[in-house]
Length: 288
Image (cartoon, rainbow, N blue to C red; front, side, top):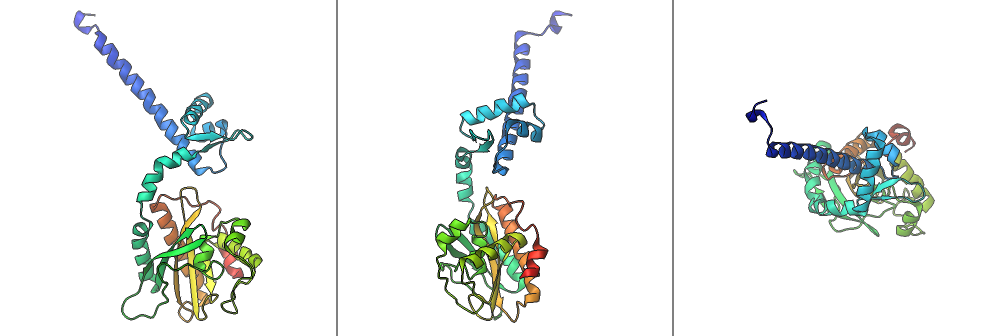
């Protein structure tokens, strides 16, 4: 080897930097993989399950989990030993999610749905005590449509919108926002919490909610929930129209269109669709 071929000290240092950066990048990628995995697993996963799911060495996975735990991004259940994404992770994406205006994301989807169905389409946000209509797309050209008032609150037990917003709520949550006796707006209105809970189970199965002349005679509505990062309903998109135009034979097709629109808004807004939601649309639609 000639003197020119002999590596100098700077060349050795550069080689070491390349190796170090490569390892750091690999660890960073694995750490991000773990966070993405745990963000989707609301029940949490143990270190072994994380390693298996991501093809990592168990010891390496455990070290990364402990580092993420120290930094506050994951937390471990002392009883089950399962790791979950923590609120610290939410704080990182919170500003981004808040900057994503739901109406801006939903507007083009609403417009397309209205054009495809010929009906007025509305958007509602879920609140702690119910919901509120925040946007609407109307049909032009003098077509008679059923429209909602922006700022109005949907009746939870008598509207497709209200049912969609609370379709994954616990029984206790439903009883908190809906107090008996339930007002009967028409002969078709659900008038007991037990009936409403049964209706919400049907919503979860088929993937969309139905208002079959339950708030107003001669008006039918369908709506589907929009989900957040954790797969919980934060809003809903729906359409309403005269019962003469929205015949019962059309409800299934319209419901699936609304559901597809809600799924698109969920994805584009950074949300996560629960895996079991809308698992058996045929059976539940038949019962309706």
